[in-house]
Length: 287
Image (cartoon, rainbow, N blue to C red; front, side, top):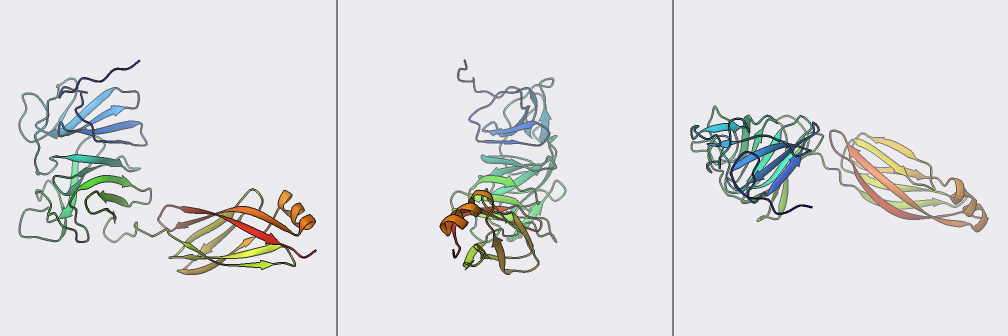
């Protein structure tokens, strides 16, 4: 049996949690209107929290609090590592935590232990800049410029990290998703593809399906009733995948002259995650 929790600012307490994320090390991160990020084990044990002014008797700068030090409600603002209205959390394979801060129109990055690394958005470095920038503790940070240009946000509502290194940020007001990566890298590789022409070989009872891909990667076709086939793509364009029946489908084809099979086609671009589509194909064979 459970009952509603008691909201508050003490160590381990939460108030209107809006974002949650986990990492590969078994840690759970929660963002709430205490203007801090709290870290727990997946069994529910409180580990630490971080934000501005979160330690009782401490200052008004960036701090990390624990059960031993005690915790209090953080101070909202736009300084380096400071948090305001957080609507989403994400984490990557390296254990970094990303915070979608709607009020500050930026995304802040922290280590899993709570140290502030950087934040990014439009004009987030104090000064006269108006373009996409990355701020750190050394440069200082400020509230990002609310804008619908590339790299800008109006209301960051969710953030997620992809194994290939891409950071995806959703904007609830702009109804769009943006992809970010390291300078010089290519993590935001499209994995969208589409089917082209299906050609049947009625003498053999096989077929070939054209698949149009956006760039280099690997294509794979599989299914319970067909043989698995893999092809490597070196450039954008059309690739032909063989569809060859096996087992029950092959027997039905020889008996009836036709059979329907369900195929799964997956495309994984280099330095990107896979995308899979399902399609039904009818194979025919002259008897």
